[in-house]
Image (cartoon, rainbow, N blue to C red; front, top):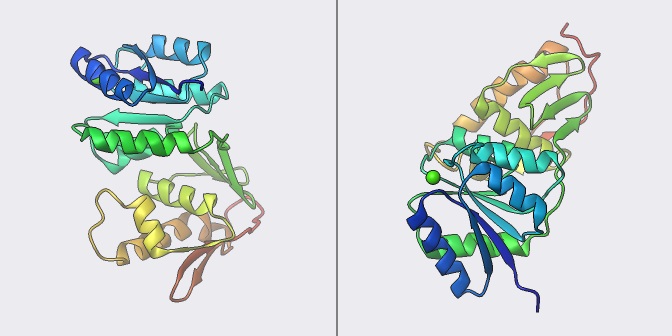
Length: 233
Ligand code: CA
């Protein structure tokens, strides 16, 4: 049996050896590097099954490492570790191409569960650019446009649109939106989603005289193909 090989990128020696010992106990083959440059080198050199990547490491930082690997077409599952817990941070990590996100301090069992879940997934290339009609969202550049017209979105609006785009043509429920876009600081009233849908419509649809975000009464929302002429009317 070929060993499952995991790369740990962590500059704190205590944390690194704790992670290494814990994962080796589960019979994984584990390598440790302590900075971003070595992480990129190691991930290029070896076909890892999973990378556990601390955000706060000597440069380049964890976000940049993830982005660099994805830009090279390396889709190894990446679990980001960070000490900051905020939606913006999470969105940044996922935009950079990480697959999952864990906030320090965490229970070791939780880390094991996340790693097992990532290993079950086959690494799949996810398009850097999502499209629906002439609406475009570029994950790497963190930009949105309709036709040639650039659209400014807040991080939350961006995350919401990204979620709708990955499910374009399908109905997504408010609960699904809540879980994927608001899981860290959702305030308990589903009204916030409707408010953000309204913000989004005002930016991606109304100026172009189209309606791409459909309200599915009693269920949720659906993003449909809708071509504008690419300039606000
Ligand atoms: Ca660190």
